[in-house]
Length: 335
Length: 305
Image (cartoon, chains in turn red, purple):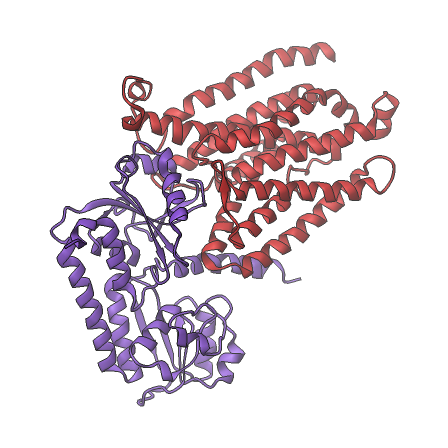
């Protein structure tokens, strides 16, 4: 088993990484307007006069990087949560994280509290706070059951909280005035046009911290998918591992949602697709999903930027429209 | 469980409502009246569910006939004294009926409400926001329907006169390629909504001596991405903020937000302007004043003696 996995790690992962890097390099050269790359990188032209450079470095690059971060984060979180909950339908949004984030964003938009600081508006801050609040509630409910985390309670509490928050979101939207309801609705469709590097920098610590935890998880996740008893028998501190997996995945999802809104489908399509292609070992699936998720969202965002150019197609719609049918096709093909 | 259905309707209605609320919706048919059995005498108990129509009714002298208004009516002050009967999404049909109106002014998308009123044989005045000339049409039409033709004519002629005065001042100026922003995330250049090449915000911009940078996009509102803003390179950016007037600190902050797009001529040349206050985006009798404010921001030189 190990030789097979090792071989796959050395063939699949560099391939996925190369794909993600290629996407990051190529995507900023394409867009709704045509720009001259030589002009964009010509430092002899003053910054204020160099439209091509501004389109490349202010409009496109932060956006592509945001897509890479969000795509990688949502895909990796999906892998972690599916293993943790031993449920193939789990997504980064199953445990109420996205509904909490959405509620936070809605309240701030609807109440007109959206003042900003340091180039980051309060909307992402509130959505991050909301996702952490939801995480805390679910965590506290699941922990109060017994010594470890109860994955059943985790799942049920998450799904219930999702429904509860969704009702609150509708309530807030109903009370908000027209323009604000539209803004909240648009927020739910996802948007990667971050417009500067500020939001990326703000999200970076949380994403990096989560990925640091993800890096040590794969072996434990392999054992957890066999059942917590098996994992415990093999010497895994199940309670601690579950806690780590849950908190890091929620933290990463919260940061991703605050950056770009709740972009659906990536957390479920990418992990399953990667599993269909490379097998179930998390040492391959987790990093491969992160790379693939990054490339996938960059691709979807490219469609979103150019399909209706100069207008924009919300990226959440693109991920669902591409991801859904493609996933179903793969499912049929492999079954 | 009938939960999912209302939510979806709310979402769709919210979209429509947004267009209505920002007053940039525009259909080809601005006004249509459908009467309940050809009532000849002027209505004496009018209910208006559209703030722009409420303003018109009070302006043309039909205020005493207005029995109730929508939840969003704040102008004129007298309108706020009337009972409120809901608004675009949530008209309170029971209250409307209990106030025994003989004319109800509704928005074109309120088809459920229209059916209910028709069933009760109550005349309906149906309206949709459209272009600038349609405001004058609607005012004159309302005058005819409510028995205030002379008052309506005076109001409409006044608006025409004021618009002509603006045109006389800015008409000779070189038109400026302008981005008209009516909403965005505060302190960040995200979710920027600007006027496209349709609807009365676009018309107002043109009347104020501007050329809309999004004139080719035939829709009322455009979500402008950073790339699109850089590519269109407007000479002037006008931020219209409906609501309480901005303090000078708020204006400074709003202008500073744009500094990131250094290559845009408007940013380079200090031509980002904030026009804030009430009544700027209401397609009613105050429209000429709003156009004049846009014109002053666009062509300050045309207004100095």
